[in-house]
Image 1 (cartoon, rainbow, N blue to C red):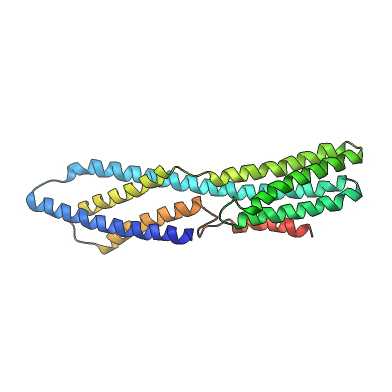
Image 2: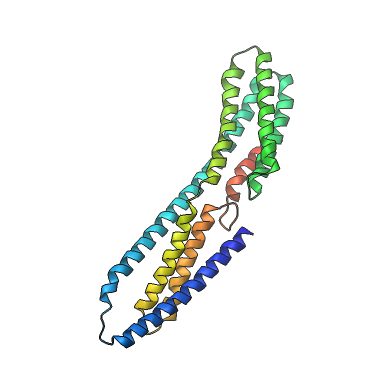
Length: 253
């Protein structure tokens, strides 16, 4: 659903930029008709400022979106490593205490995988994972006390802390996006740049390649930026990174 909406916005933006290029061209031709010997060189400073700001904002937005995508991908690996480490350290507990805890771990990883298989993180699976955290912690503490030894406390419990903490980090990373005003400004600058581009081409021969190319490149750039920002919805996805967590689940049997 989000992919279709993203594509629709890109197509609408593409069409709007084409329309504004035509509006700018007609305005330029009308001005040229009134002032045949007029010089439009004075407008270059304004156009340069708009194009410079547009290029800067696209570059920063693209770089930021790609950086946040990489952070989210690395966090998936970090969570898989934290779960794998805690799983191995269950061996420190008494043999009788291990089976129920390992069963809770399997349920927990299933809940975590289901949480991120859905577009929205606030799901029943997320709530179930939180409840399982409490169960895992209480069972682990009780088993560590029954062991009557130091290693379960000093090795297993810190690993559980890391496994639980990473969930909050991932949830926050999922909510990290630029303000809506940034996307609005990108769209406005793209439209304004199209108007100026059409105005600048008023005295030149009409080139469909340049007209279509300008609108297509900007529309695709903004589409990719939004897709990077929401990797659980669009064409750019975190499915390959999620496979790491799936492999950890398979190793649990």
